[in-house]
Length: 296
Ligand code: NAP
Image 1 (cartoon, rainbow, N blue to C red):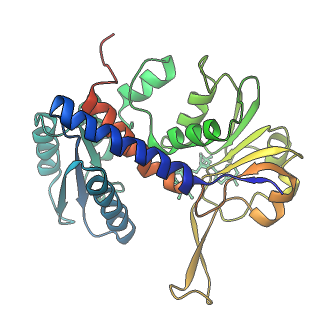
Image 2: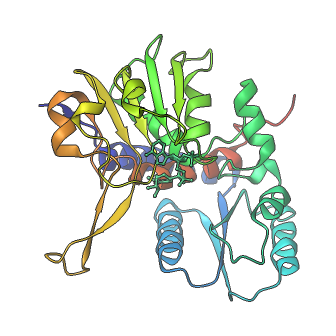
Image 3: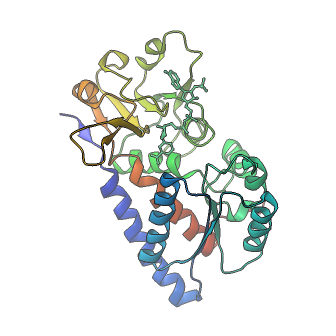
């Protein structure tokens, strides 16, 4: 049986550490980490995500603001609110929940957030810092993957990592994190996307396979070699009449077929998913404590 990489366990350890450090930061320096969350519209998944993030703030003793604006809010109002938070010393992190309504330009909003408060790590300055190996906020889901590998002592040095997916929030950043000449990195990285004629040809070469494609259960045992480490980022809803909700969540990897060949594998749910909020909280803490510096 493979090692089942337990994201709930690792994320709760990280959250425990942040809770303790937050108490110290408050008592020693009088600083309370503050996170501002912006939600525009009523996308049900976004509502759930924002509520979970707010709950995590409360549990850690953070200060938080949730601004829930209507779907028809003008772009200018959103930009003005971000500017207000950029200048508010109680706020150390700003998160704009995506997706935004079509009339609000996502890139414009991301660019408006001060890089030193961009705890989602989506601002091009933070992405550039990641690429050239400078300190900065790293996107939360990829940062969570690195923590999982670290926790399970899965060495990446000289290993061949194959990433399926090139999104700006998962595929590109995780690839960039893992090839850096740095601890918990130094891997040889291949990035695949839909232009790959025969995806198997690449994925079978992976020592560590990271899949972030958004296609349910499509990585089957014939895509991997024996002993592979599989990180399944996918979260897909599929119909399930036996569940009260009428659906269940599955990853991009067909767990039952791939697990017997794997050395270690993340389940869905309970693998990468829980790490994202933990890393958001960690980034907010690091912003408040000043441990990430933006000086050259
Ligand atoms: P995305 O923006 O939808 O992009 C998907 C990427 O996968 C694209 O680069 C696409 O290639 C590639 N792709 C799709 N099908 C493929 C195939 N059959 N063969 C090769 N490449 C393929 O992806 P995302 O936002 O990164 O999300 C990916 C999945 O991760 C989703 O299920 C999402 O829900 C999940 N996710 C989970 C978390 C979390 O756990 N907290 C966070 C973020 C995302 P092209 O570029 O050529 O189109």
